[in-house]
Length: 247
Image 1 (spheres, rainbow, N blue to C red):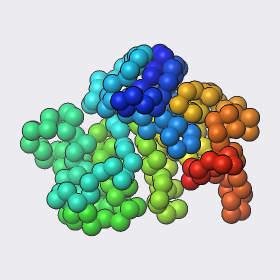
Image 2: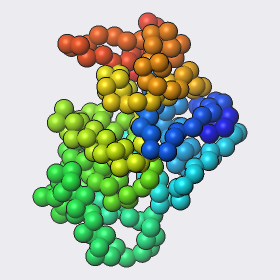
Image 3: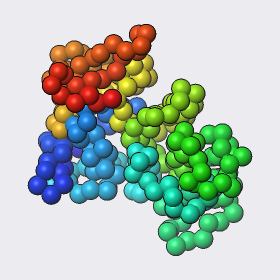
Image 4: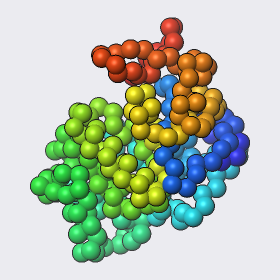
């Protein structure tokens, strides 16, 4: 990315971001609400056009080789489609929207549902799934897409600990397979424990590099964030006094 500036109408959401997501890297994108995390993922995935700057993706054929998993509340779960059919949508970038779903794609979708523990719900309607089950279905769709670059927007928010651990393991498997994975999230403990690289945003880049050098108290304060103790030793991100909490 070079001097990437993105906005909606007159509002700038991301300004002057430059840097490289190395091939095969696992990077957390961290920031308060409104910091530009989702906007940045939208720009990388081609959903919005930058006002200024450029994005270059080497070795990937968009959209087939780039998978984007949005926040769950941005998807209409009442659309009349089965869990299996929804999962098979991960293959549409390769077969085309109007293409028939071939038997091999159905098999891949079923295998993906088995990998996330939803194979027994394949025939259910999408709207019947719980929040955690729906998030598993989204991950299954990413498995079907089999992309070289994976973008995840708050993928672990609002799910139980078992589901979160299962999905984290899947994400780590994608990284181990050599995929480039970028994840917008707010759980500082997860970032420190799992992600080697972190991009700290506050509409502009506050810091980008090794996680331990990025998530320092000084840089978190510069981003309008501070660490706050929660139950046990669990740490999360919170806005500084006078601001809105980000969790």
